[in-house]
Image 1 (cartoon, rainbow, N blue to C red):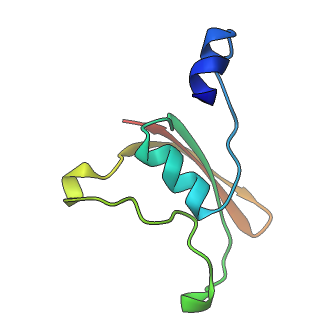
Image 2 (cartoon, one colour; image 1 turned 180 degrees about the vertical axis):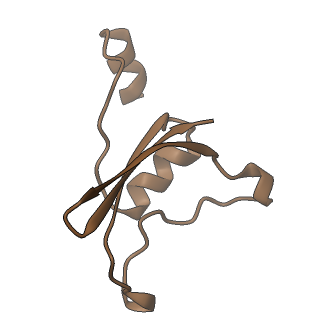
Length: 85
């Protein structure tokens, strides 16, 4: 409902920041056109928090697909940019 109201008001771009639940909710709704992804050279294992929560996929073919636009180092991290394919 909020996205529809923003669109009606002429807003055509929204930055969504949040945890894995927020990311999954917008992905499940098909409301993500682009990803700006930062990856650090550390491993958290099972103690880490998922960047995207469960998407409730029935099959792999249902997974949202993105095309990489670019990768750029930012210090020790990588900044990856993707758009929905």
